[in-house]
Image 1 (tube, rainbow, N blue to C red):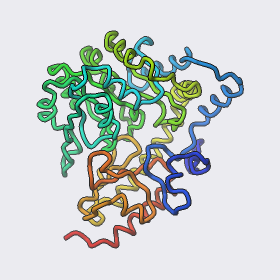
Image 2 (cartoon, rainbow, N blue to C red; image 1 turned 120 degrees about the vertical axis):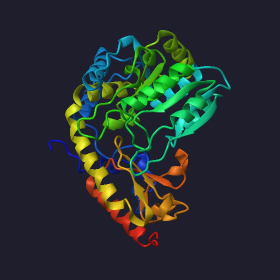
Image 3 (cartoon, rainbow, N blue to C red; image 1 turned 180 degrees about the horizontal axis):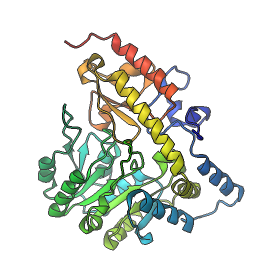
Image 4 (cartoon, one colour; image 1 turned 90 degrees about the vertical axis):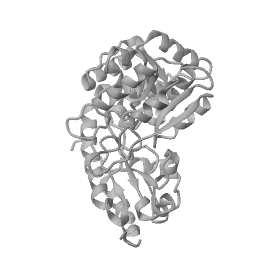
Length: 385
């Protein structure tokens, strides 16, 4: 491979949140959704050139950045985005909170499917909206994690918005067309705005898989959608503070922009540079990254699934493994594995006690060390049955 995915760049810097949580302790950090890999050299080179200019005043998205975003959408999804649909943001979580404020009135219901990334549950509450959780149906021998569509339809009566995680964090589903069309049908009948977080859309792990943006389903889906995207997860540039919303409907876009006024800053100027380079020049790096992530995902399943009652359903997207520890009889699985030297995210934070989330966006050697520790700890437990 021409790119190096064997080095853990994030451990080499002093300001990394992920590894600083366990500073001075023999704990492998695999919690927050930052990869350990160095960002693409094409991104680093673009940033170096921008820094060399010595000019760091107020800035705005350049023609190059907008063109890279629109070009990547055409290339990767077949999505024709008009430039005026773009609304720059300093981060995707900001977009979730702005969307909740832009749609409906205080007290209105906002739906989301759980378990889910924690800001999906906090954004409605911060926005004086009523959070309504619709639990996903758990996987069985034949079916993966999936939507409870009748429950979603019932909950949607009187609601104003649906926060859709697409692909889903933490369960790792890449929703297929039939599932998305069923959601779109409910949204149409119940007159919901769909806020679709698609930040992991460039991390589909199955060879040949292609992301389908919610807004591409139909003209109606487009007009009731706010799509949130960023280069941050795929290209490991989250610290540069740059994301964007895609809002085709002019009225909805203006409401979104009004909700931003006076409280949402401009994106970081280096984030704009990184976004342009990532979408414009990062395709080859991403293709190699996906090979590494597929191998890491498969290693987790091979090492842990079925051990001491633990269950791991292979992720279809993201670099996050969602691990069901309930069968192992662990009251606090995050603390159990941390004591064994592996720092994971607690499923309770996502609305699912008994689970942990493992970030496998790391060199294979780091993952192998973590899996060895986890397996050794599980092997000491009484075996089920």
